Length: 244
Image 1 (cartoon, rainbow, N blue to C red):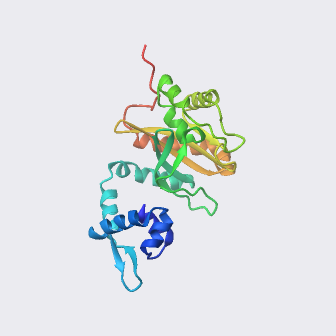
Image 2: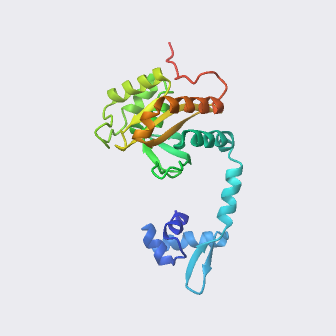
Image 3: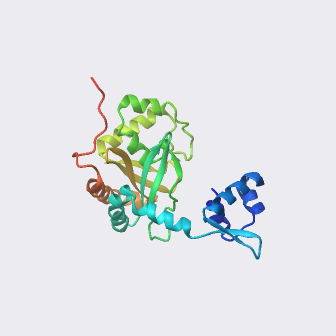
């Protein structure tokens, strides 16, 4: 949280500035700042009475990234998918009623979908959310669908459990899932689920509506190839079957 404040401010900041930016009491901010200073994550810029992060956080982040087995397994494939499709590619996982963006491979087009790692999106409005839901048993999925808020974001947003379930079933039959203007009117996305070490994730290709929908057949083929390359070697990725 404190490091995000430094990133957003883009400069050294005083205790009061940081507390104000984070909307927390000065005493709480002081405790955070002192704890980080003791661990050498921030240092005082004494001439101005301000603080700024050291590069220790960067070193720690690099060590974490270097040992991320998921990223090691999928990054080169998803980078290639971004290069061949030309669009932004995202790796995501479910977090309760949301989809969490774990990795983003951004398109080089001037007009493109821009996203940040760590953001959350509602399950009901995204192709990746549908892909993940499509891997569940019907009973398990029904419990989650009953809890979703179904917030309408565009005229095409699916706002009932019945409509969402029908769209997921259609996606299962196609082998891929879509979001054509359901979350942002001029954006479209396609996605497929993958399993890595037994855990379900989703890979999505997202971009301007015209580009995605006009080249949908090619994009779905590129997506399928990438997902097969990184998913667990158990054959075709299928949804969980109901027990008899």
